Length: 363
Image 1 (cartoon, helix red, strand yellow):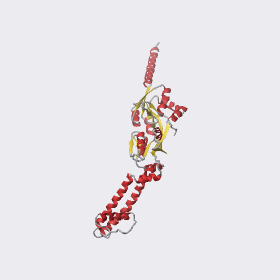
Image 2 (spheres, helix red, strand yellow):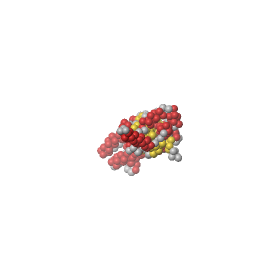
Image 3 (tube, rainbow, N blue to C red):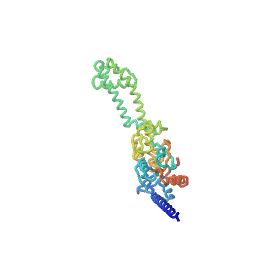
Image 4 (spheres, rainbow, N blue to C red):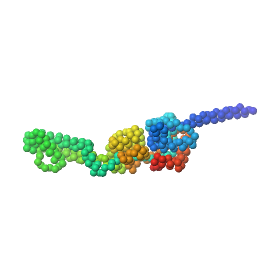
């Protein structure tokens, strides 16, 4: 009889415990899943419906898990990471990159895809001779030639002003004398040395000495600049590694992406930053930039989907191999279950079918 109150107390505690547990379970029947557009992992169609590698994979997991999903769209991965940090989301199914810092802050799942940063360049159906001719008449090459003529005319005019009175037979008065100075400056720079024009005054000889040494520096610099201008369209195809990439001008990148982080780590300043990889590829097709860095699988998917094969090319070159995973806030009660299901699903034949449906391969 004395044990009856104790039994009732234990029963009441048990009921309260199971009631609280049931309430907790009901709170996570619907998971808030953060996503942002990142083809082919997350694709948003014209009807605002989502599909893609990550979406299809998650649907298989959520069905077996028996939970509902409410997608919350963000503009980029940074917004998702911030929301996870403040426990505003239950899960991110975008293929976020693993790192030691993220493993410390979040629960990081088994990687479901291994990717890398790809390099896309413009393509050209022209031969090398056609490229050379088209570049020879380009605005960039014309600017270099005009600058060189301006420098020659400047030094030639200075010498003519000094020599025109005491050496008027070689440096004639008037407009013809300016051409005499230009001719002398060009002959001296190229070290041809015809000898038909030469300064006789001390001032003219001093100017000639200064011009000779200056011309050596200028001609070497202009030779490299002219060669670069004439071959710029064919340089990108010769990118073999990071050092070659550092020599390329006008590199484009997608903002808040792994490609942008890669450039920062390697002290490379991007020429232009785009909001989406598709914007970057279209700029590349217009030749606004020479190279675009972004996730390899995304570039490959977009080039094929938007039929950009004739204007852009994905090089057989990859940087920064990356392991991509789902992420959840620390101590989320369903992490272990989701992680186990994820590992199970990517080992099933259905995952290979999903990869094939988006023309994606296991890298």
